[in-house]
Structures are given as C-alpha cells and as structure tokens.
Length: 266
Length: 356
Ligand SMILES: Cc1cc2nc3c(=O)[nH]c(=O)nc-3n(C[C@H](O)[C@H](O)[C@H](O)COP(=O)(O)OP(=O)(O)OC[C@H]3O[C@@H](n4cnc5c(N)ncnc54)[C@H](O)[C@@H]3O)c2cc1C
Ligand SMILES: Cc1cc2nc3c(=O)[nH]c(=O)nc-3n(C[C@H](O)[C@H](O)[C@H](O)COP(=O)(O)OP(=O)(O)OC[C@H]3O[C@@H](n4cnc5c(N)ncnc54)[C@H](O)[C@@H]3O)c2cc1C
Image (tube, rainbow over all chains, first blue to last red; front, top):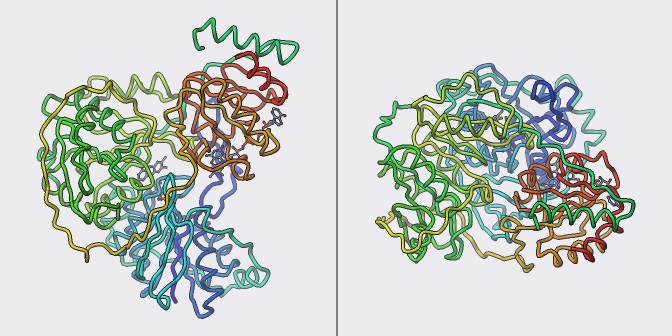
C-alpha cells in the first residue's frame, strides 16, 4: 500500500505567552512541534505498515525550511520518505491555497491508496485543510476518525467517525482522505534505528519548490488566498476580581454568598 | 479566479443543521445572528434558512421563529443521514442557483466537515470557528473597543463597506483575528456553537418556503453510513446551562466529582470539567469545557481545583460571573475570577453546599 500523511510543524501553543505591553504573541523560545493530530495520523499509517510491511509511507509538509526538523522526527518514527514544500510563492497561503499546494504535491508523488491528515492544526486551528485537499483531489473524506480498520482485502476502510454525542460507522473505498483525532491511537516514540536513518546525509527528505510541484501560481500564496487577516489582536483582560475574605472556609463562603446576594447574582 | 459579479449576490443563508429531524441549537443561534446582521446591511437583505434532510419540512416553523425570512427546503431520501458528498453537492448547487452573499454554518462536527468541502468546490474563502461577526465597520469598532486590545484609530466608523468581518480565536485562544473575504462570494464562515445569542422567538412568524428537488443519485455518495451510535450517557447540556460547577485535577480522584455533582445539584447547575480531569478518566469527555471541549457562557461558573490554562479559559472566559476555589492564590483562574476563594476545595465546597 501507498500512504500519504500530511503533517504541519506548529508552535507549541501551550507555551505561548502574551506580551502585556504590546498585546502580541511572544514566540521566542516557544518550541516547534509536530502538530498533535498529525502525529496520530502518522501513527495510524505506521500501524498499517507494521501489519503490511510492504507499505510505503510518505509524509508531506508545507512550511519554512526549518520544518525539515519535524520531518526528520517523522522519519525517525518510521516514515519511508518525506517531502517539504518550501517556497516564498506559497508563503501566507490560507487554507484554500494551502490545499492547492499540498494537492499538487500529492499529484506529483503519484498513485496512493490512503491519505491522512490531522483534524486540526493547533496554530491556525481551522480544521479546513484536510477536507479541502480531499476536494481538490476529488477524493471521498471522513473527518474526526477515532477508529479505523482495513477491510475487503485492503480495498476499503471501516471507520468510526466521532460526533458530539456519539459516533457513526462509515465504510469507504480507497483511495480516500481520513482526518485523525487524538482518540485514534497513541503515537509511538522515535526509534534509535529511525533516528540514525533520519540523520544520514542521503536520508530521503526532499524539498520541493512551487515549480517542482507544478502548481498554478495563481492558486497559492498570500495574494491568491480568498481569506485575509484584516486585523489581529489579543482579548482584553477582564477587570480584576477580589479574594474573598474570611478566616475559615465557613466564613469565606458566608462572605461570598452575601456578596452575590448584594449584587443580585443569586 | 473569475471576477465575480458581486451585485448578483444577495441575502444571508444559514445552514440549518438538523440531526434525526431535530434542529441543532446552533442553527437558531445563527438565524438570530443572521437576522441581526441583515438588518444592519440594508432593507433588501433577507435571512434564509437552508434545511437539508428527508421529511424535515416541519423544521421551517422554528427557523421562522428565530429570524428566517424564508426557507430553502432540500429534501431527498438520500439526505436522511449526513454524508459529505450528498450535502456538499446539493448545497453547492443551491448556492450556484441563488447566489447568497453570505453563508453561515455551525462549527459542529458536521459543519466543519461540510463547509470546507463546499468552500473548496466553489473556490471561495472560509473563516473557521468564528465567535463574532460584523457587517458595519462602526459596529466592529464598538465591539473591538469593548472587548479587545485593538487600536481602532485607523478605522473609519462611516465606512460604507459591508464586507463580512469574521472574528475568531487562533493559537489556542492566545490570539484573535478578524478575517475578511473581499474578493470572493459568497463570504462563508463556520460559527462556534453557544456564542451567538438567540432572539426571542417570534410566535406565528412565517415566510416563503422554496422547495428544491435535488438531482441526487446513490452513485454520488461514496461513503456508506452503516450505523449511528448515540453515546449511552445522558447528554450534558453545558452550552445552555445557567450555572456550571467544574472540577479539575485539584480533585485528586474520581470521587471528587461526587462532591462537584452535589454542589451542582444544590445550585441547580451542570457539571463541567477540565481536560486534565477528563484525561485522568475521572469523568466523561462530554463534560469537558475549553478549546477542545464545549464553549460555555453561563451566568455563574464555579471552577474548583482548575488552574486556568489558556485552553480551558478559551471555553469559559465569557462567563458572566466566575468563582474560583483553589489552594494556589497565584493560579491564572484565581486572577481571572470575580470571586477567588483561597483554600482546600474539600473544605470549601461542603460549606457552599451547606450555605447556598
Ligand atoms: C490568526 C490566523 C487566523 C487564520 N484564519 C484562517 C481562516 O479562518 N480561514 C483560512 O482559510 N485560513 C486562515 N488562516 C490561515 C491558515 O492558518 C493557514 O492557511 C494554515 O497554513 C493552514 O490552516 P490551519 O493551520 O488551520 O490547518 P488545519 O486546517 O487546522 O489543518 C488540518 C490538517 O491539515 C494538514 N495541514 C495543514 N497545514 C499543513 C501544512 N502546511 N503542511 C502539511 N499539512 C498541513 C495537517 O494534517 C493538519 O492537521 C489563518 C491564519 C492565522 C495566522
Ligand atoms: C491542544 C490542547 C487543547 C486543550 N484543550 C483543553 C480543553 O478544552 N479544556 C481544558 O480544560 N484543558 C485543555 N487542555 C489542557 C490544558 O492545557 C491544561 O493541561 C488543563 O486545563 C489543566 O487542567 P487542570 O486545571 O484541572 O489541572 P492543573 O493545571 O493541574 O490544575 C490543578 C489545580 O488544582 C489546584 N488544587 C490542587 N489541590 C487542590 C485542593 N485540594 N483544593 C483546591 N485546589 C487544589 C492546584 O493549585 C491547581 O491550580 C488542552 C491542551 C492542549 C495542548
């Protein structure tokens, strides 16, 4: 089988702090990581490879040159081949433009059976790129996948797709796009052998330009993107509250309740 | 992209999501929001609810009650359960035929599957998971001044532009961005459930119902939904709750949620949780509040043993009154809280149950 995994390098948003003076994000010193949902997507591909050893897993990422570090991590976990789409022409792409670029790279890679993405990237937070790549490639999609299994002699998959209040069981023929959520599996660590492989100078981690993927330049990058950031800002901090006085929990609660009653909150 | 003729595009559409013949809460929230926006645009802009399903015409009444001027009804046996392929096809066809200026979807597990697919097929922009919408620059300035740190001095309140200004959190709630799709129509966004307020139901409201006979064949649908399983647990309705009592890692054990439940019962509230408590297996994920859980804005939010990580705050910081109980006075939740009680929750909560 041939499997493609879409993986994005993202800042660890749990480490981001806001500069209270300027109201901007402090990105310095914030580590870059493999997007969490994408590590579940990769894990699922690697599990298929564990079961069917002739499986070939290709990871595709679009981003700045330093995203190569994340691709090395993917390789150290077990990916066979990694591709980084890196070019100024694709910089500033919104999700529509991003999916045009990634779809072009997928076409360049050639035939495949299954393509995985994460449900959502923790920086842009849109959850749009997976479905949009599927549309651009004309593939069926199942999003929010929490369980999957190959069936019909590996010609189809059975998946459980999460809903807010339960799940659906869906069968879909290959090739198709699946987007992974964290319930899908528990990602593995890098292996020593894998780290060694990823560090070789001839490790199969390629960088492709916009010309390499033969994408129409009118469909990628900031200018072509149908959405634009009009303004960005940080939420306003709320008015400071009060510490409830009292020597004992009983007194504290008494004071709290009398305060709430005074303000007609209860 | 072809230069679209913008004057051909008019009206605000709301995808009135339904499951098993029941309208999603977010559908009526969005109709109310669409109503508010349309009245700011001009007198010719109408709000239209798009109902897709099989045998769902009965839902039109609720759509009218919450703001719809008209309803587009797309019924077909193959639309009974949601599939990406079928819903994308019939909605794209309808958009192509009627050319709405704006289309809003709930940012539900279905809306976030459907809307990006439609946007990619139509080659238009889509803004994700919005928490605020404006069509008038003056209204946007007012919103920004009240709620944000944005310097609005460069914006002109008299600006006649009525492009949709779509505001959304990104970077896990650390940053807000207002997105605009100036050059494509329709302008589309998904909107987070639970954030838009509903108008008072307009009794006996009615309007035009436009029926579309969709051209749909079984071969159009490439996914086969074999079954739908509803989680056996009772549905936790956090988004509609007036009072929420939430517990976090500070409970130290699953038994702690019994105490939380007792307090919730006493105050007439619903039980919420932090992700740490959910991940520990102390409580079902349906109780989780936050970025990857439910967004809530109750009258009173009581946070017990929750530190206040940004992802948790993202889901509850718009609560009217926040009460925090924590051993650590420095915890971010204590800073955010209107009323912070420093102490051991195992001592404080029983007092609250006794005295409330
Ligand atoms: C503050 C802010 C707000 C934004 N809001 C919007 C918006 O509302 N609408 C919009 O269209 N764009 C928006 N963008 C642009 C958007 O973030 C970028 O296009 C981004 O490259 C992809 O979106 P995402 O991070 O949300 O990915 P998601 O759509 O959440 O990603 C889903 C999955 O797609 C795959 N994927 C995504 N990006 C890549 C990549 N670069 N390489 C490989 N795989 C990838 C991964 O598997 C990922 O898990 C915004 C950008 C910023 C800075
Ligand atoms: C991508 C992503 C998405 C996330 N989404 C969410 C989300 O949706 N919702 C969410 O909640 N989290 C989310 N998180 C996790 C979040 O970052 C925090 O890890 C989590 O919210 C912490 O939960 P907590 O406050 O219960 O635990 P902790 O941070 O461990 O806090 C426990 C608190 O309890 C207090 N305490 C301890 N003992 C007592 C006692 N006896 N009495 C009183 N107080 C006591 C401590 O002082 C401490 O402040 C997400 C994280 C990531 C990376």
